[in-house]
Length: 223
Image 1: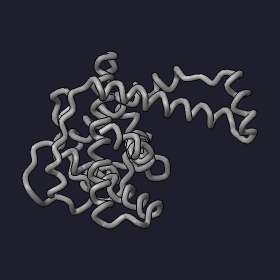
Image 2: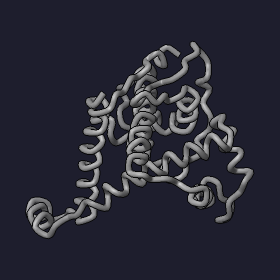
Image 3: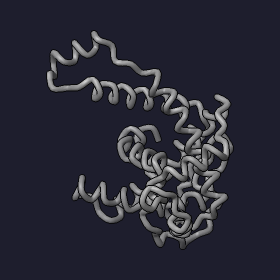
Image 4: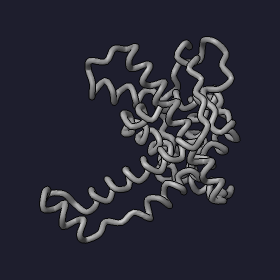
């Protein structure tokens, strides 16, 4: 599992970042038929439902497919399908891991914070103002009720608070900048900082995942 995470870190981070920003409306997929599966994975006993997997698939399937079709033309349709399934499953596991860590840190997202998050989501705005019709259209596209999506957003926001805590602890020291600049004069402090943050997040997440009990349900590949 960790080999997959390392190999596809960029795609998984893209998925996570997209969810963090607003859950961009990408249109619903037709991936809703096949054997009945109760869950796609368990993280420390907590089930990640097939319903949630389908919502993620509707939101992120197209973007993942476009990414791979433009970066690796050798992949077959079946290869891309399997990569999409694994990337989405892994992103769901990662989100649950971060949420469980958020609970350990005592991070709780209030209704007011959720309201602000939704109102600030560009995907739900019309001329800078929250548009309920756009919000409801988005929910219909991913087959989720407002209560379900809002519960999901609270979990995502809480998990991303943990990421922000890690981000804020990373610094670039002057001696690091000087040493790296000797080898690459074009590099910026911002680029170095982002590289360090990505490495820290990967290391932290790898450690948490290693100490978690994660069970994947690979029957989803047979859908």
